[in-house]
Amino acid sequence: MSASLLAPSLILFLVGLFAGLAASAAWLKARHTTPEPVPEGPVTHELHFDGDMMTDACPAARAILSPDDLDSDPMARLTTRLGELFPQFNATFEAARADGVSFELSEATTSGPVHVAVTCEGPRTTFRLTGLPDILASRVLVNREIVEADRAELAVLRSTVSTGPTVIWREDKRGAIDWVNTAYMDLTEQAETNAHSGWPPKRLLDGASVTPAGQIAQPRRSPLTLKDGTTRWFDITSHGHGSSTLHYANDASKTIHAEEALRNFTQTLTQTFASLPIGLAIFDRQRQMQLFNPALLDLTTLEPEWLIARPTLYDFINRLREKRMLPERRDFTDWRAKINELEKLAVNGTYLETWNLPTGQTYKVTGRPHPEGAVAFLIEDISAEVSLTRKFRRELEVSQSLLDCLPEAIAVFDAHGNLSLSNGAYCQLWEHDPELVMDQIGIVEATRQWQQKSLPTPLWGDVREFVCHAGDRTEWFGSADMENGQQLACRFVPLAGGATMVSFQQPDPIAAPMKELARIAT
Image (cartoon, rainbow, N blue to C red; front, side, top):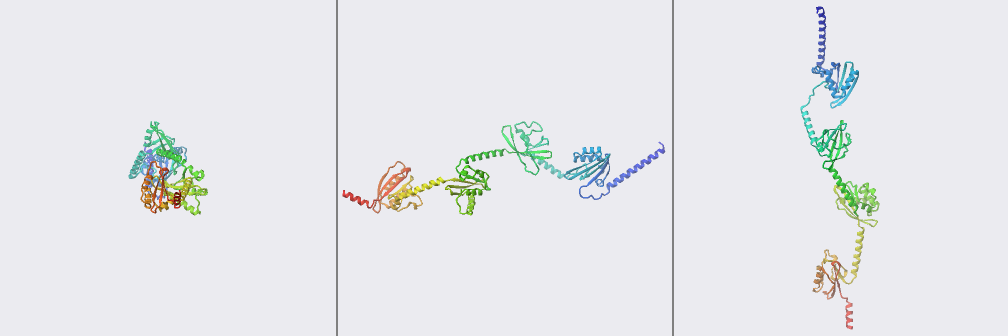
């Protein structure tokens, strides 16, 4: 090559070399120049590429880029970073470069929103990145203590899920199981079907409706038949987690058995109460009716539809008053006070009252306390008993009046030898009224009183043996002399049920002389 040709080539080479050095000096000067203060808020970095080579960057981007970032392939590192944030970025970027168009992508991250705007014009590409501080960073510096804490928390979570009694499994968006916990695998070993034949395991239970965020889960009850023929019940709740669904199954077998036992017990109580002649009304701690039996309808004439509506205790008493099934009260204030008293005494278990109704019926009302603050009222119709008692009392009064009209002194002793009945002549003869004595008077005490008013005689000892004798007895007679010289004619008559009647008769002061004159005349 001649010197004439070499000189121009050398000149061009030196010019290019100096131009490259000037450009590098300008880049390095711009790289190490103190950047302007960055405004508050998300920062936008702008990068320019010609093909895959970076040709320019904004001052904010230059401030965070290092020589290592420029020596490697910046385009590949940037697209890889953006592909991790935006799954659709790579496909969208390739299509935009082929068509020479622009596009934008946004994503919400834990550190804030990220926005990317890409402009493609032939071989030139411009990236505008907002909210992405480390645009080309290949390493992430973390705190060792935070990492250790995260690992410890992860171990605790894995142990909790693995050893917990709750059956948990996860399904993907197609409904296939992609994860289960240890309790689920244990349940597959107990299931009737061979659910543990491989991975993924078969579904043992049906999931519930997915619970939206912020709402209370509505469990779905599902049965599972085991190999031994028994059935276990589970309450299942489902929660959405991204594109997957987590299902939680809690064993509800004991709850099912308890509910069944309670249902059977309630049916037994209902059948028992249905046959009772006593009206039953049970009110809870809020004083609302929870249970009643058919006898209550018959005794109170209340409508079953009204009672099924669970009236309060106040409404119940008020309705009874309207139907004239309560004793008459002087005024409303007094009646209201009676209601409060009724409730208070029933809670303490001391309420017992007899209601004399305007209809002529008589009810006995009893209040009984129940667990959890409930109160039960028992209403019993005792009209027949009251009527019988009144009739018996009238008969006793008539019998007593009849005995008091007799001139004989009469005393009746029961099978145990206790004085149960006497008349006025008896009280007058022995100057003793048994009704004024608090304790019962036996045959021993009675004969002792007779002996004090009469002369000594073995008759009273015979009377004691006769009254207390439990075998067959016959009527017999005797006589005793009083201290005043009168002679008593005594008669002892066995009565039904082992009772004994003793009668004392004094001689008639007029009839005795007449009988003596008649005897002399004859």
